[in-house]
Length: 291
Image 1 (cartoon, rainbow, N blue to C red):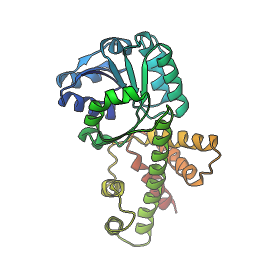
Image 2: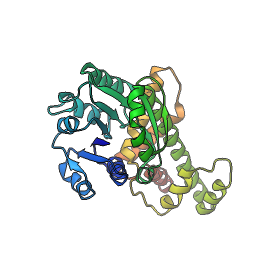
Image 3: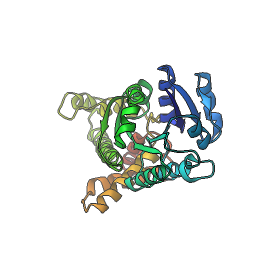
Image 4: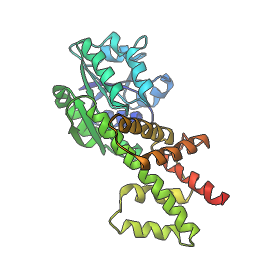
């Protein structure tokens, strides 16, 4: 199967490599075209524009940073809409709000194309190891056609029904994750401030009912001030903002998520946006040092 891939950031690069390793022919595009060179070394072809990629490939996947980027590759000059047609499918795996996903779907289908949203749960390491969780919604036939690719990219795929449901599920998951990371950060600082060994807290947590891979994977690095980005903090804050907007739309009170969002905004104001989202820990440490 030949697929196109738009967007070679942390996630897109890893996902494209996995497709290439597993025998897919892949044509890639990135706004900064030089980022394609590493993929070419692994056997990829390069499209000069999103339209060129769509023209060449039956199915094109996008993994872009935010709603603005997701819309840009569709509607801008030399964008997806210039070549999408009834024989082609477009799968947007970016994390966007439901409204953006529906807008993209309407644009693709108005040209006769087939659309699937498929945001993923998981960051850099799951992307590299093909262990993402894929949250798809839209055209069921395109979902079925994409399963060979999804089986390479992820450990489990869900089909969630109509367009918008994948985006909603991803925002709920990331809202919970961001809220947990803030509570975890506060706990680590509280342990330290109380005279406890934070490493012992990690051991205790890992043996209890709230043990989870995020605490296990992020905790030791956080205690060493290591925030190498698996999932950039600026993207986590974007997802908190979009989840809170979804809460507004559905009249759901979300005070915990709102407070977590403020902490991520504080971290961005401290210049931490390009670091891993666990760098929100630094906002609590700052409060500790100033007390």
